[in-house]
Image (cartoon, rainbow, N blue to C red; front, side, top):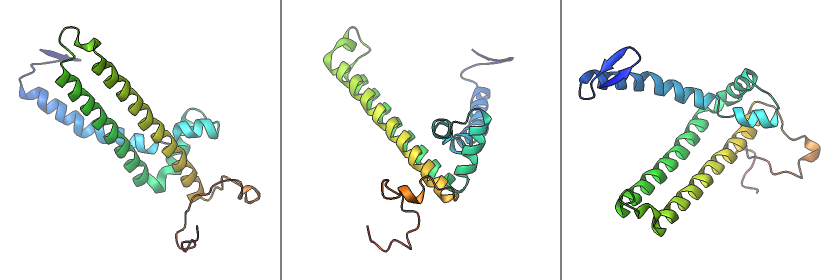
Length: 168
């Protein structure tokens, strides 16, 4: 028996299935849309020192033209984390970590450490990718991050492929 606010549903009933499907169809696209629009919010909070709704509005403004890039980055890194979690879980099931004191074995400890390090690396890569996306979106919207007098000291992004002609 499952109690959801004022509704009581049985686990084996079709009502729970319809409820979960309805929530999935309505809630998941809204959450993905918000995540894509607000993907630069934490970068803006650090770089531009903006807080609250102002950073969310700024993130939505900057990422407006490059939503597909932000969505593909989110899906790629989410897929990588998902694959890592599934593979780590499958290994722990194969080892039998839930039985007795098997969770104390060296293989389980090493697998947990490896999964933690890989998760950190993927999340760190996503953070750096969002910083680069922030720089790209800001440059795309005509807001130069780096003045021309400092152009030789920083690596710039290749925004316009027509002007490059392979001279790198």
